[in-house]
Length: 560
Image 1: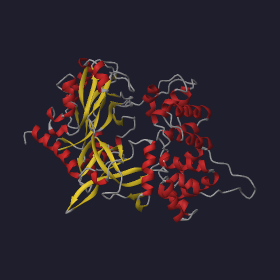
Image 2: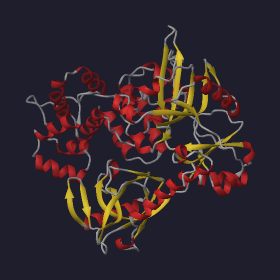
Image 3: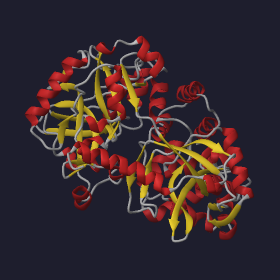
Image 4: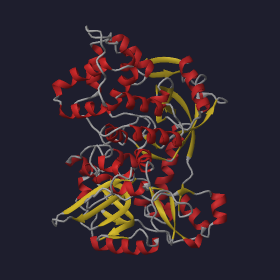
């Protein structure tokens, strides 16, 4: 456990991706099986311990420390695992004068998998007694599943692949057929055995990603005739895979763009995967024929399963835009235009209302594409125009290449909206930001009788530099007027407060917010120290933006 704790500690303080990868390769190279396999599972989010929950950890520390002191410490530190690790008393030596050894990582994982709910608290308490401060922190991060050390599953897999002569994408394609603690995988990358035999009939295939379009440079260097334009939808990227296994049974899986199996959360979509193919597309919510805001899709995300009411209220669909394989034939080496023809034929033959085809633009050239990007309602029905967040430009002859190859696909997102809002509340961050107030709730002015009041319209926690973070943190501490646990209310009077310039991708109507609107992807673009809160924008501006979308949609449908 000590080596794993040291790894997490070093990773959490290392900002460079290449250095993180080097730390991972060194750890996996030095650490024996099965510890390194369990570490890999933890870093890729493949480990869960159903009985080790935050409430249990709070109960453990309440037996060791004053609850009021813990609450104050947690408010200051901002991270549950770190707070408990710091406050947990040192156990010292046993009566014989010897220190009980710390548990190995494999011991922790295998024991927790077998323990009943009633046995977990005592076992965790014993381990915490036997570990130092860093070890306690790592143990608690491990059991709660919230490592937050800046390592993605993709980076961890890449580090494994580069231990030997293996392509990361080759590893990705067999990943879901491997068993923890991955002894066959390590033997392969170290050259001790061949590639692991995986018989998964519905594997995940690494996705192809696009580069953001540089409007000046790329438009000058690229020939528009070499590209096809598609709409960029405001959902999540998915890969829908169906196949018949060796027993003649239909198998089906739905993956996120990172390869996470999300099938259990979307059983309604899974029912439609009756084909033998791998489809690349966008997961959306469609109700009464109209694509719904991303906020509706969020209600279906990050759930282990979906009940009948949730599926009925938020019916999910796939809008397909590529096909990677059909009936066992790998199509990824074929040109995009050929794959598109086969996709069109596949979707037409399916005749399934949950899977439709993403339309391509029937205009071409940079000027026409720019107009379409700015005003999608001129080419699309109202039920679809509101779900567009830009364009995708795909080279006609491009094969389907994993990763982000240069010059093949480009994403051209719509320009963000900008408003001036007033900081109202601030909350401590996590990890490296746990000592700073870095999560900000902001509002705009709304008429309330003869007076104006601030109403929250969004929350953002990125977009600012480290120096700006320190400036905002100082402002929050110096201008706190109320406290609610880890949240501080800051001064936001007409002549006293901090104005934030907020950029966001779009707006949705919302009955959950007092303002009646909800922002999509808000971020802090500038600190407006030059403005007073009274100069911030009004809710009417946001409502007019919404009204503009509604009006454009009505005009397109002939209703206005």
